Length: 332
Image (cartoon, rainbow, N blue to C red; front, side, top):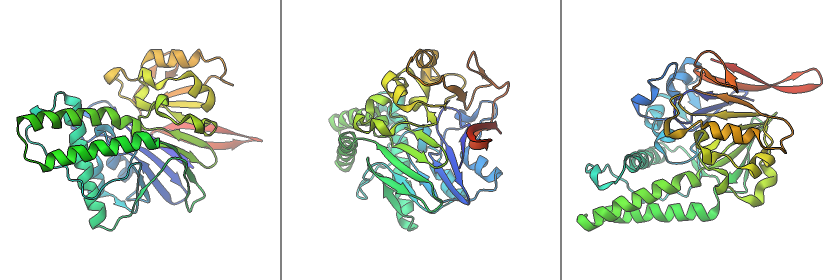
């Protein structure tokens, strides 16, 4: 198994390859300014540069612009065979473009609703193109033809159902005649849904010759503690781009990662790649060994990381060296 964390700036786009099979987890942002940094690259451009024109499994962790914003461009350029999501999408939902964005109180709500509308259009596209969409539910395990398999460790049923109810409320308001009062209510409900979306991220464990824990933006306080024995992983993608809420001592002790990767922009947008996060991890006493920290959009992050250049992607495999296997890290 090979895994590449594409440098999409602040966002996620993760390519997993096993034999001839290609899996993409999230697509990165659709905002052009996100790619202004050195060697940042759109997921489509990276895939095509590697000769990849087909994705066997497209996995969407959750609905936020930095995870699904690039999805329409991906679908224009890459053939997708199947899609996996973490929520029960109602085909009756309709989220049209809202021209009067002033009804939304902050930029985060505007971006969230834009991502929601984009995702809704893509779900219609999947239906019209007969592309199967599967809902992954917590506790499930899905084996793939290549021998690789997924363990689904989140979202919790409670968080998922609450989020789906919130989307239904937004849809109902949009179907009514909007007056001043209803516009205010719509803005409030969009803001609440935006705040909930991280908690319904797929917490995906990818297993083959090594184990990779990909929790989207679901921080450990959102995870199901009853599944703690399954959290252990060789490679751990910090949720929420390394913001301070991504750290949890109990979770770190359960995961025992060999390598921790952060998918954030080098300008530390939204206090991502927070220095306190890494300091706190290094202070966890019950780790079997101190993990190696790597970053998708940093030339250096002293004292933990010093590459000397910004990569287009971080690539990780596990290679056998003598009687043992070790994780091999390289950079495009």
